[in-house]
Length: 491
Image 1: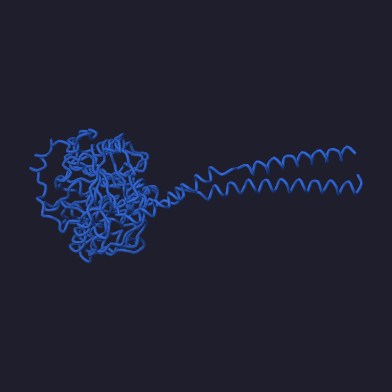
Image 2: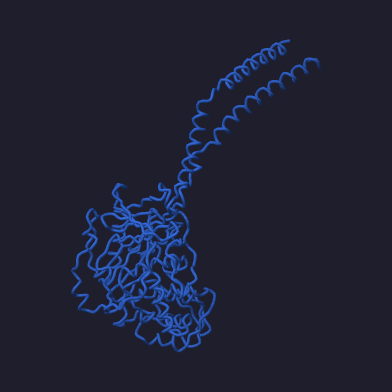
């Protein structure tokens, strides 16, 4: 083929490429214009509630601070990256003096009805043999199930959940404790222990595993003295923290849960404490562990192998419960069997508490209660469609309930901010923090929306003929170029 013909061929191919490029650019510009329009992007619905944040930060405890219940916490309950927001509640001014639970009180309430079964339209809860129980949803504090939930009871070693929480809020896991006479006294108090010796050194991490898996009273007393300065001072911290969490039927007298006729707590208050503890991923890691080994210390020549009596997180146990995040079991003659746990499924976190149950029944009854909660309730996010909601807006309702059956009331907190409480048949089912939008703000948002709608309409009605013409001309040019190319190749 001659040089002249080659030049002609290359020129033809160049023109063809340029034509295709021009057509491509024009088509791309159409999509760019279309992408610049987005009504949904221009509207702010406020801060919507995200159940996908991980909730695992450890709060620093300050005995003089009343925790702001509007704050969001993160933990996994470990929550497997599920988030829940702290419920707006009014913190009681002081812990009321409650009558401790006596054997007569327990006897008189043993056949009491499940109070939540009296709510119109509420799913009927299961009958259980334990004297008191509760199922509480963690993101809203909605009570799904209640049986004598506000009656003061002997808690047994469920008390150690509060002990563990305070240690986690005040100590570093790598720091150490040294056993004194205070801790050694726990070896001879007829409770569980790991035979700690005076002068023996443990890390806080090792001590917490001994506290929660072995329910060791010797370690418990030593942790209390180390954190509080004295055991009595630590007990005061426990009561202060309970008050901050909204407990109204709680009085701690020791950190171990050993029987004391003055010490008492209700199932409802225990659920509030468990909720706070489950915010901490270290708490969940410890209490969900099947076993733990404390290595040789400065006073022993062998390891200590600890086995957890709480089996709902153990894959090999018949009591294993999918989604369970941790908990604690306990027993004394005065308290009967107790169990406290937290679990999450489908983004709904639940806390279950069973008090004064029968031996080997508390696991089964806790599982029954959790199944009831997960199987009969659902979550709505009302804040996603309400521009005035700036946080919260999540509600827990009976499965299948239409949203129009949900009502709410608001309390003015000042500066245009309101605490909103959602209700179903008079039962609180969720909370939100809302803000009064000024009329000029509303008009501005409406104007923006109308302008964008008009822009969208104008764009949709644009005459697209120029683009069709360009495309047609390009097609003709392309056909001519192909024809010329074929003629040249034939020659």
